[in-house]
Amino acid sequence: MKKTGWLLVGVAFFISLPQAALSESVTGLFISHKLNDDKAYKQWRSDSQSTFHAHDCEPIRSGKLLGGKGSFKWGDSDKFTLMKCQSPVLADLVDKGLVDELSAITDELNLTEGKLNILSDTLPSENAEYLIKVSYFNNLNPKARQKSLAKIDKSASKVRNAWIDDAILQPRASVGVIHPDNLTFLYYPKAGQGKSFRENNPKLMNKIGRFNQKHVERVTYLAAKIKNGRMK
Image (spheres, rainbow, N blue to C red):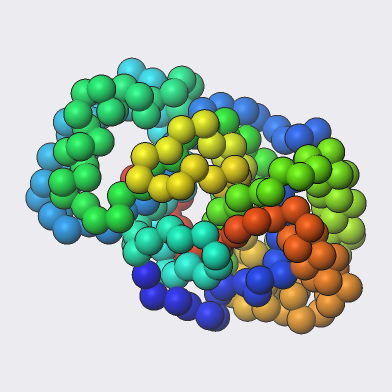
């Protein structure tokens, strides 16, 4: 995966909301891969349609992964889809051999399923600076972590042009990737807004950096160019 510094955040950046702030909760499935056979993938889409339909799944975000930065290795996936389902679907995909089929026609395949909290009822523009943060916490003091999260979120909510929370996925099962603790989806509505925000709020960024040093063992940021509601 190419590194694209124009969109990626620095190592001090952080976002993840405390549980009390979460809204609609359903099952989420995050899929990322690097496609190597377009024709076979179209057939896989057709073959898997009934399984996704049985679990009432629909794609809510999809698009290109532009680059990764951080200590959590995600591989060279260049496409992703975030699906919302009414029941877990990953085990069914595995049992029916659909994961093996997809693995045969893609590289760097990763599937992560868990509790999905949709935090925004507004669709981000396709020109938005979209980020997916993959976190692995040290879990030395979860209560203190949640308390610090609440303080950071409260401070950020008072700052102009801050990021917008889109969704949080709390993984329960993964295929093809080290099982992360948390996937956070967020965005800045306009190009260049993320850089401006970080440069103009050094105190908040320092707080976030201290939080990461204390509570986060590994973290990686995936920059994305999104298409709403389409499966890639």
